[in-house]
Image 1 (cartoon, rainbow, N blue to C red):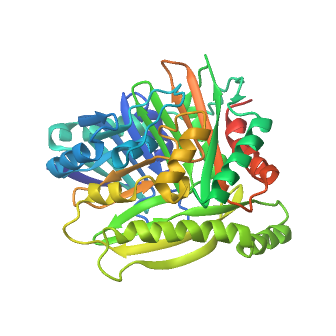
Image 2: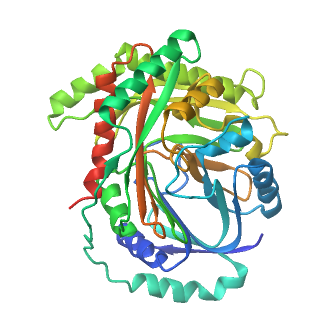
Amino acid sequence: MARILKKIPLLNADKFASQLLVWAQSFQTFFWLDNNQYPQKYASYDKVLAVGVLSELELDYRDAFDQLDKYQREKKDYLFGYLSYDLKNDTEDLVSENYDGLAFPDLYFFQPKKLFFIREGFVELQYDTAFKNEMETDMQQVFSIELKDDQEITDLNIKQRISEREYYRKIDTIQTHIKRGDSYEINFCMEYFAEDSRINPLCVYNRLNAISKAPFAGFFKNNEHYLIAASPERFVRKEGSKLISQPIKGTLKRSDNPTEDKELITQLKNDPKERAENIMIVDLVRNDLSKTARKASVKVEELCEVYTFKQVHQLVSTVTSTVKKEVSPVQILKSLFPMGSMTGAPKISTMKIIEELEETKRGLYSGSVGYFTPTGDFDFNVVIRSILYNAQNKYISFSVGGAITINSNPVSEYQECQLKAAAMKKVLSK
């Protein structure tokens, strides 16, 4: 696959990024990723935009990973897209029969015509050779865009799919399953939604990103389907033969008082319940990575480190491995999917309990968005802290959840869900 590369210095990278994102709205399909310059060891860019479709792959779950594997091997180019949670039905004998108001495909990837990588004060353009003559015109259009303070927000009637009373009943059922030995940690989620409603997706993305500044933020459009993401969590990254997974488990709200905020960091780092939840998932990730790893290469680089974001502190662990040469990029993803931080453990029996007790098909929520490079490297996030929108159905949805163990306090877990939902409600209301 041949691409034309061109680097252009930027006097104001933030302004250019905003102009570029406005320009992207005219495309039927685009993919925007932003790390918000969050300090992290593993990163390749500050922001990236992929627009225009050279080729695409849209599937339900049946044989989805095998078809994606064939597509990635064939194209050997940048591919951007998503894996929905319900691809679990391709990896195991499972079903997804709960209500789905969004109607997203289970898997979607596309090969972009045009790519823009923003990093270190310049933008690198990578265009398919057939569109090389459009570089100059495109840049003129982007630089000429006048930015407006667009705050077009309509108050929405946001409903909660599971009532507080029903939530407590379901947590009791989950803890009964745990007592029976069916699981020892279950990530239980519930949906908030608005029907017969419209939003300005760009405005909502800008508002959500401004209050979150998450390292794995994203904005995706494919015709009527939109993802507006402020994810703090990496699912898995491949750099050559190295895999990096960074599960999050353990959350505590921040304080405006600097002294109290430091105390909260110490409190979270030493909280036995939160550490236990994180360590359980680390063990699951270590096991998952071992499926494709060279012998004795799985390592825990960080265990229960506190990462601070704009609204919350969270416990993050970093698990790495060296992958076997014969395993393809998509086979790696299939062996790890879905991510343990969004299921619990053991995976299969826990996912059956999730399907039994949750009332909404997860779809893209708790799935993953990201990209492949031409050399087979990749980087994928975990779709949390995200708003999903079907413009044709006029249906808006976001979900929140948490890890439930035998020691979980139902009231505390419910309050944590409300905390996580508060940011989404804030950006969707005046």
